[in-house]
Length: 333
Image (cartoon, rainbow, N blue to C red; front, side, top):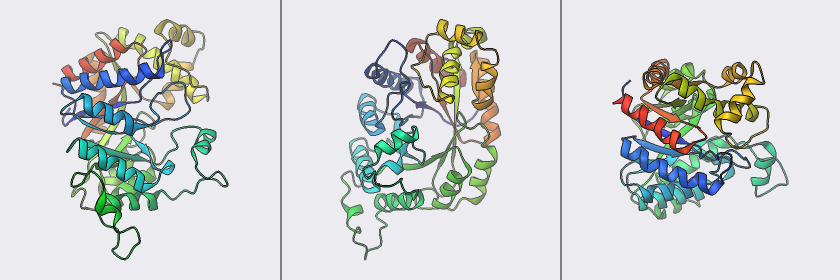
C-alpha cells in the first residue's frame, strides 16, 4: 500500500449504550487515530436511525478538532439537499477559521436516512424536495471561493464569510456514476464509498479521465472508503465482524438496530443460513489479522487506483474498535 490512510466514523451506537456515549467514543477514537498517524478523520451524517448517532457532522467536527491538534477533520459527509448552501459555507468557514488548514467539507447528495425522515427534515413540506444538487453545489463553491458574479444580489456574501481567509477543502462523496461526473466537472477531489457499493473502479477511472482542473485542484484525487475489521487473528476478527454483519443484514431489510454484542450476532447468523452470504453480496467487508486486512485494503486500492484509503469500522466493543485501527496502522507502517 502507498499513500495516506484515514478514518471514516459513522458513530455507531452499541447495544446497551446511548447516542451520547457513541459520540464521546468518536472523540476518543479521533484522538487515538491522530496518535496512530492517520491523515484525516471524517464523520458521517445520518438521521432517524437507532444504529448511528451523528446527525450533525459540523457539531462533532468542532468537538473533534478541539480535542486534537494535527489530524484533518471533516464531514463524510454533509448531505447538501437538506441545507442552504450559504449556511453550509458559513458553518465550514467558521470551522476553518477556528482550525486553520485542518477542515474538510465532504458533500453528499443522498438523504442519509429513509424517505419519511427525509421529508420530516424539509422546512417546506408542501411538496417533495427538488433535486437541484448541481445548482446547490455550484452555489456553495461560489460562496467559498468568492466567485458569485458581481452583479448578483448574493455577490457580497462570499466576501464576508466568518473564517476568511481560511476555507475548508471541499470534496464530493458518492457511490454512484453521477457523483463522479459532477466531481470531475467541478474539479473536486472525490471520495468513493466502496463499503456501500463495491463496484466503483470504473466510476473512479471515468472521474480521472474526465477531470477538469480548477482553483480547488489541478489534478484528480481519489479516496476509496472500505469497511475493515482487524484483530490479532483471522478467527478473532471474524467473530468481531459478526456484530456489523447482523446489524447490516437487518439494516438492508429496513430494520436498523443498535450494534449487537458478538454472542447475540453469532447466534443470529447461525440461525439464518445464507444470511452471511446475503449481506456479503451487498457489502464488502475486509476482515482478518493485520496481514490479511492489509492485503485486502491493498487489493482494493489497486482496483480503484486510489490515492488514499479510508477505513470505516463498526464493532460492538469500543476497545476492540480502537485496537482494530491500531493494528491496521501498525501493519501499514
